[in-house]
Length: 264
Image (cartoon, rainbow, N blue to C red; front, side, top):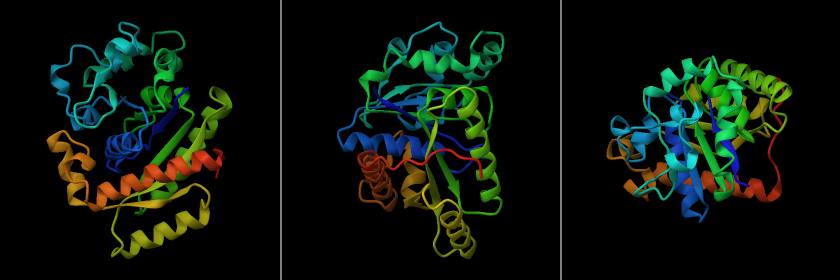
């Protein structure tokens, strides 16, 4: 059965969607079967995968409400090689409707049961808040990957998110672990970034990926073309970094070195 990884951080602009798209394509390049699940009403993962979110008749919102199955909603991306469960702004209305439904925090987990065995990895792009959609993602997942910029307040935000993960693990999803903390949009010329990176390694030595995602123009340009960076410019520093991240994840799986989610 495929491993479900939620890519989450309550702070926006840290590279969650960029990570989801490019990690999905990089894992496909290693011959893994990958499903990307867009759980953000902004639909950026959908657009960045080359699918027009505005033309969608059904989205992950309909899937959560039980109006369509995951099998029926699946879209095969043209370039990335991964499958997609798409989203758009209609997911916001679905979130409101979910509040009235039983087991509202388990809807995504239940919806994925029919397709989970078809994939090696299922990546969930979460919205930039700890809302019901993110809760659904964390309840459905085996682990959570936390992209973050090395900037002021980053450690405080990370600590709060780890506390939330631990609460969910104790209350509704005992299998939930921290997959890893990913440093994104990193500029080694920035003294603050280097300082925060050092603090991350000191406080969370077993949870920080060795791979660092650099600030890279090609990574920023690729979504406007509906392409993962590996398809837009395979030799770019951003593409190579995500390929390295995929390799690191696979090596961790082989050695079983995934960190438990613990309060900080």
